[in-house]
Each structure stands twice: as C-alpha cells, then as structure tokens.
Image (cartoon, rainbow, N blue to C red; front, side, top):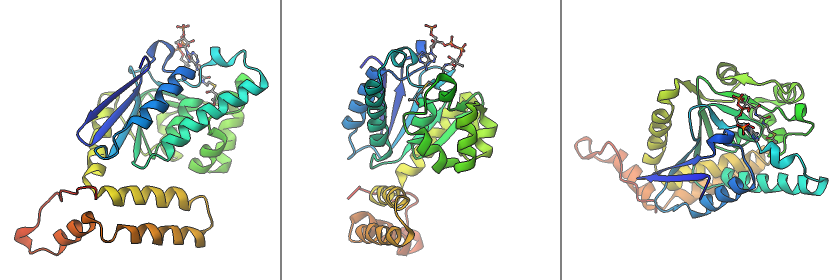
Length: 262
Ligand code: CAA
C-alpha cells in the first residue's frame, strides 16, 4: 500500500491515511487501498479501529481536487459512488471505529469522519464542507450524514455557506465528542478504544448494529431490531461470563472479564 498504514496492537487497529504531501486528500488510489484495508481487518482479533491522518496538520483535506477537476458528469457520479461505497463499508464495519481528527477535516475529510462511530479531535482541527465554493455538492455522504449528526438547520448553514469551523465550534454543535491537545489525541483515542475493546465484543457489535439499523426505520421497527439483537446476546459465552462475574461472590469477581468473543 502506498497511502494507507495499518497497525494492529492487541485488539485495537489503527488505520492511517498516509498522503501527507497532499494533506491526505482522497484520490482513487487512497479509496481503493482503504477499501482493501477494511476487507482485510481480522474481525476475530480486532475489537475497535482508530482512523487518523498522517502528520500533525491534516486528518483528510477532502477528495482530491486535481483528480476531480476534469471529471465528466458520469465520471463525477461514479467517483461519488466510489467514495460512498468505501465510507458505507467503514460505517457498517461490525466493530466500532473512532476518528482521531488531527487537523483539517474538510469535504471528504469531514465526511469520512462522520462515517466513523465516534469523533474526537485535536485543538488545531478544522471541519467544513467547502464544496459549494468549488462548484459541487458534498459528494461522499456529507449532505446526508451532516444533517443526521448536527441537525438539519446547522448542516444546511455549514454546507450552503461553505464555512470551515474550528474544533471548539465542532464540539459545541456535537460534531465531535471531545477536543484534546494534539500531542494527547492518539493516546486518548487508544484509551477509548481499549475501554471499548474490554467489553463483550458480541454485545458491542450488536449495540452498533442496533443503533445504526434502528436509526433508518421508525421507532416501532427500531425497537424490534433492538429486541432481536438483545436476544442474540443470550446464550453467548460472553453473556455467561459477564453476568456470571456480576453474580459471583465478591472475593471471586474479576475487574476485567476475559471475554472470548463467542
Ligand atoms: N485535493 C488535492 N490536493 C490537496 C487538497 C485536496 N483536497 N488539499 C490540499 N491539497 C494539496 C495542495 O494542493 C498542496 O499541494 P502542493 O504542495 O503540491 O501545491 C498541498 O496539499 C498542501 O496544501 P496547501 O499548500 O494548500 O496548504 P495550506 O496550509 O496553505 O492550506 C488547506 C491547507 C486550507 C486545507 C488547503 O489545502 C485547502 O483548502 N485544501 C482543499 C480543501 C477542500 O476544499 N476540500 C474539499 C474537497 S472537495 C470534496 O471533498 C468533495 C467531496 O465531498 C467528495
């Protein structure tokens, strides 16, 4: 891979978009490599993924403007689909993904962060959908996910004005969950990932699926989705281990249950 770094450390994997000369902008090759990387994650071992960008200036500065500049209508639509397919794969990865946003998250960069389950960022992060200023619409899910993440009114304002916002404003509108000094960002992301990885993996996966699938349907159908995924947890070894530990005599309890993902 030329543009993607993948590192597994126990149950946590880190994917780094590594094209710092172009501020980690997403061209077709980056998207293809990211797609392959997602396919190759060992889901038996890895329980949480962190997505970040190489360097300390940019997470992802958007889709590659040079590559897009000469596209025809049909090619533009195909490029949108290419990005959307990869981002949807990321969004529906069975395990949680934390975006550690370490700088610019513009256009496709903001969009890829919104395909992750959780966003945290460094103090120098900047978010935005500058596409309207470039003569296009956000094309990798921005018109859909921004509205779902920060509400319709705020999403419309950000997209129509093409105004970039700093980390503190992103935090205020709920686009990120927390802001850290740059040097602490990865440590905090790893800490959160380790906390998630400690919990029962099947339960965590089912929580992700229940939330994601439930948000696509009305509340009556959503509750049924939850019931099914709740029921699925019973009779797993992890459920026996988790509840068994709670019910065990105090002197036999363990602090961290060794969940086996089965
Ligand atoms: N595409 C291609 N190249 C990019 C890029 C992008 N999105 N963003 C930055 N680069 C390149 C620059 O062209 C430059 O390359 P050279 O050194 O070869 O000239 C290099 O990265 C460094 O960038 P700058 O010199 O511009 O760095 P800066 O610090 O002065 O500015 C910036 C940083 C404000 C992020 C500026 O680079 C910028 O505005 N980038 C574009 C941001 C943008 O508009 N993103 C949205 C793209 S459209 C999109 O994403 C569509 C979609 O929804 C799918």
